[in-house]
Image 1 (tube, helix red, strand yellow):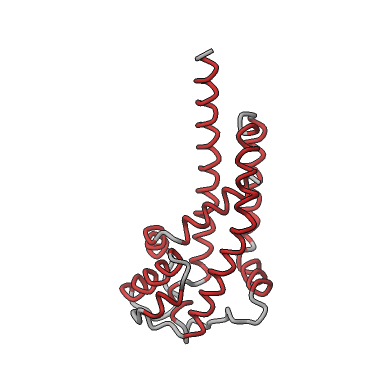
Image 2 (image 1 turned 180 degrees about the vertical axis):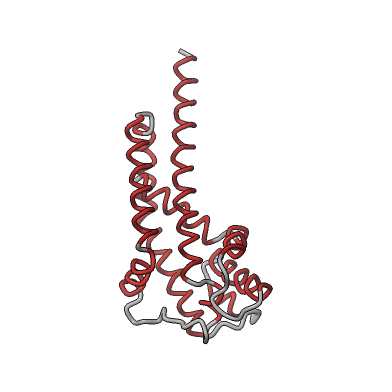
Length: 195
């Protein structure tokens, strides 16, 4: 549960933070002939849609020339994220209560960080086939296939963007676990000293 919680929280931070996207843009080239200014403008509109859980709100502004198919895919992604959070959030809250007691044990932290590391390394090595399989599973109608020569969405967010974002999610998750461990340890130490 701790791994699911930290990966989920990290994922939401990464997908909704334009500064992280711009840092990724600095090292991951666009997937097609799009200018850096257009890339940032489209990312801003997409990010705003994610923040307000409505890609159609961003589309209705008319500021970004994505096709209706691209906006529908973004709506599907937002719906999927919402459904996942509906099921993950209660488990994550229970997980928070449980890890509060487990993170004081060094083996638990080592195990959680090891699991994040194994998942991260495996998924980074096999990222592209996993990314494609995940899309086949989650979007069986095929409404996720956007050749970069024809679609701005895949020019702004090529597969390498998602690999870089995944690496950031993993690093943030590991840091979050270590931070929780530190805070819990300090809280328990203060409680023991006050006795």
